[in-house]
Amino acid sequence: MTVLRISILFVLAAVAEIGGAWLIWQAVKENRGWLFAVLGVMALGAYGFIAALQPDANFGRVLASYGGVFIAGSLAWGIIVDGFKPTIWDWVGSAIALVGAAIIILAPTAANTATEAVS
Image (cartoon, rainbow, N blue to C red; front, top):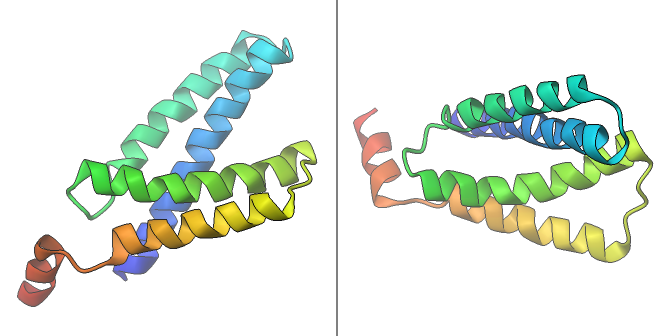
């Protein structure tokens, strides 16, 4: 359940952060209007709350591991929304980032080992 919860929260966080940044980009770079900017700021605020729902209590670990998800999610957003065509190096870099993120968030630590032993 923990891996599923972590994964779902990371995906939701990515949609909120990347979507929010994209909306602001559209407002500023593509002159789409202030509504896009306001919605973007709201989505970015939601991202902060979603990230805080992660079961790990260490802010640095959660945000560092989320970085890998952000990289992969940004490429996916670009492909789906903007028609971006990634290079092989984009794919390789994204895969490396995701492996690093998984190691950071899923590796045993003193805190999560003690928690699992209690439950």
